[in-house]
Image (cartoon, rainbow, N blue to C red; front, side, top):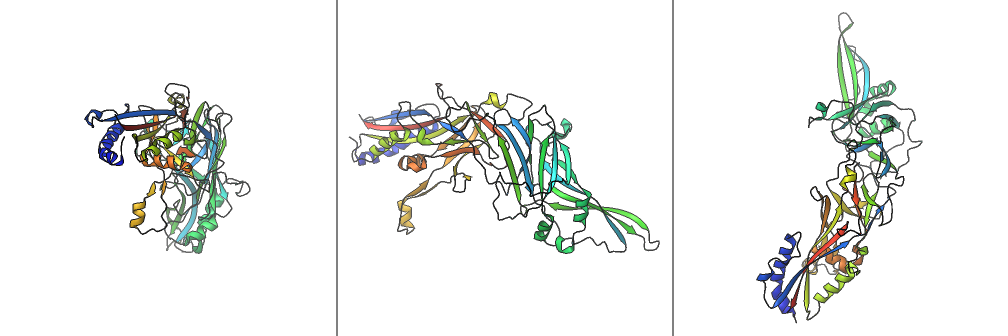
Length: 493
């Protein structure tokens, strides 16, 4: 029988075995056990269990304060129909005050007002040649930077239905390949706004042009939406870098220099003034979804799983649902194992070496249509959902008794939260792997409320247009998705 003193003696050897076990991806962790004490039995185990998950359909996400806006519409063969529009304020730049139109030596006049929207190559999803009629409207409802805005926010009746600008655009915009092959090229949609709005902005008073808040209140905001023009295409979504310096509103104006002798125009000068879109501006993404039977929700028996941004489908993961091949629940099994470790004279001692969670992309479906640009996201995140319905990546913390005593915390209560590492895509295996630390797994064994649910989603759910199709294969010898637990056991011969 092993006693506590014996276990303490064996712990360095056990840690060696655990370290060896972690470093070996495909074996059971027995490498190097021949150097351990001969009167003890060390063994490695590798438990793999299918992990039942499900597609879930969120009603909305908070979608303000975004770095990227999305515009367009698409009929995705594996995720259904999605439409995207956005609202943005613009700001004043340098404090130039009003144009001095009373100067007798100059005659000022407005040329045009242009909204510029910038993006780079492959900042799109779907058919790059799908044409959209992109329309710009005046949004008349006041926006507040301290207000939370959501992806399903209502806009009907809150904007002037007469567009102030329109442009027919595609993601590729009929440019030559050589233009897009330049890695530094930034493309701009230049949407000319109507003359009435140009004159209005041109004639803003000094009070308006010298106060950011007054300007934003006076001008309001712009609502940008689109309509797919082509009927023979699934469409596309374009990701606009709304905070780039190339995304802005620019006023073009000119003035004639008056000859003081002849009192006639001598020279015409052309100037421009840039209204930036920056972090002081309210920026909101809006999304609509019609999954049209393409996504099966709330069942682990779905043909496939879809992880989508834009308040689309995400994947719900509850570790309480995981069973080992023996039919025993994962945590029922480990509650027994770990409780035996703490007894006075355990005959066996079990050490967790690694817990990994795997999801596998269906690359055949993902890349099945060469005309449908659909890159695989290079990273996903396992999130928790807070009380406001927002997805957040859990951050690890653990307050031990020793730390609490050192910090003088009298009402100590052991507290912890889980953490999942990695989540990056492996191009060779086609899998996403999340590693759960030994401490996190122990937390879940001891505290059932930490076992889920968690939600698999892109890192940026509010401005990420791409999706990934994941395999669901519970009956194969290599079932996916799955959870893998590696551990070592030490027992007396």
